[in-house]
Length: 231
Image (tube, rainbow, N blue to C red; front, side, top):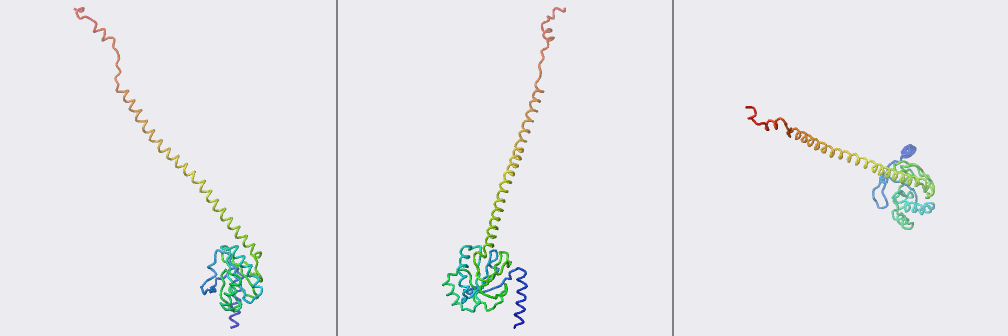
């Protein structure tokens, strides 16, 4: 049994050193099955605590503050490690106003994220599932503020990218419309040229068919001669 625990501990240390949070399953206080990957896409704090832990009690107001202030950006999973009953855990949650996810008691100091040497201990996991920090002791808003700042910067960058995409679309669309209008003008201008050409040709042919009457002065002279004058 001791050999198995050492093997698990060794594997956990190796995985933690790779800065990748190992996905694991657990049951919450309402006996619902959950897993760490369900919270992917948000910053996640996995907090190991105990009902009879003094520093853990002092830490709860800070966790509640983080959960309320950054709700939707930061998730908290509280995992009890002092073999407390579900009834004791629920009573503790009510007394301290805990609204974040709380798991039932885990009777092992070896977690998938690392070794728990003292309580409270928290693991901060990035939205892409990487383990970025292990914090021993009371976790405060000031501790996670750098990560919150990173969240806000990422959101600002995403908004700027969206605005740039919209602006680029607004620039491209008028150019396309201008090209279409120019093509339309060319199409409408071509028939006008075709219509004027036949009219010119018909005028020319009409002029050719009209006879040109020339006055012959010789005919008038013959008509005025008296035939008797020759005989």
